[in-house]
Image 1 (tube, rainbow, N blue to C red):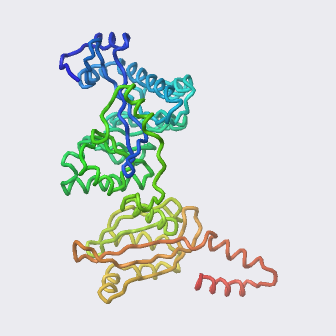
Image 2 (tube, helix red, strand yellow):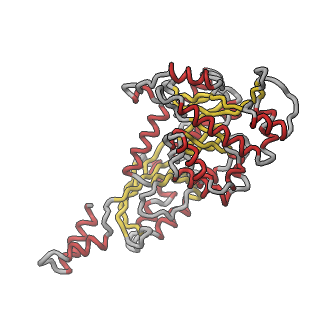
Image 3 (cartoon, rainbow, N blue to C red):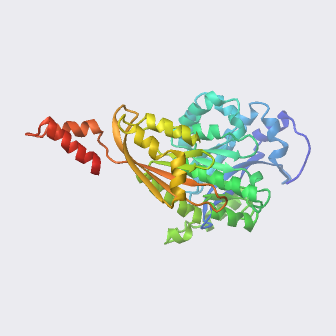
Length: 431
């Protein structure tokens, strides 16, 4: 690649119309197995003498006008043509970059569908990438735009995440499928402690949000080793392959037969992957998990979607959480809940050697009815400080609300109201 000359919009338009702009493809690989999984289409300017012009020298100029939109659609069509040539070899999905200008483009999803349908390709073979910087200033339009794309059965990726404008608010609210980690976050070769902590956190929350992850710019074995340890799904970078012309890419696809996954996935996956499986299993039974630092009076919450109530704050002061929790309990259970989980009492219990505290109460659900909930506190020891820590697991004990159970008991022939009340007392004591 060469040439640092300045190009005008007219120069670039001429190159587009004459077919000098083309697509190079950079493969993406499974982090654990090293198996090729997909590729990204990257625009290049190849002059008649064979000189390859980096997009660094012409894309910024094109982005100043709607010319970039024409280039994006052109690269997307080239990708479709490449996929058609793979009819008799393994077809790997190709992701295509689209500028922020497309967010305002009318009927984008319909236009994309028409293009892919023209080549009779399954929609999942084309993936859409948009940089995180494109989100800034387009908040109101971004959600319906991405939703329309995903509704048309295309996957969407946030590109360059962590490049300087990252907003967790966007990641939380925007329903994307893939998070691509910018290579700048690997700048210290994954050997800097702070860098490793940031990356581990990104992969953890991406997994919790059910997003796949791709690390860009992977160039060293040290980076690969670390990414394998923290459950990154895909890697892309010079360590495995550089962007390549279509002919070379098709040859790679032909040689790269679809490999069978490891027969024992538990041996192949990373320790972080195993931990994520454990977390998923825990949430099946305990839809609400709270981590508390009793010494510092703080907490944060990991809530799942099927807990009886969603009104609890996700982080804050532990004393205030207990007040809030007590207010959601049945009037007869409020005092015992507040006294059991009083912070001073919990610290005292820990000092006395208690390992677990367990309480069953009736909690008001979002639908306005009380349901039985078991709250269990486990005291844990940190390797980093002497703070008193606790992990709280909350479980819904019965699908039926208390009022519904009472009604069913009273419907049994020959059961008086007084007998029903006695049965309910036994039920509430042991269930």
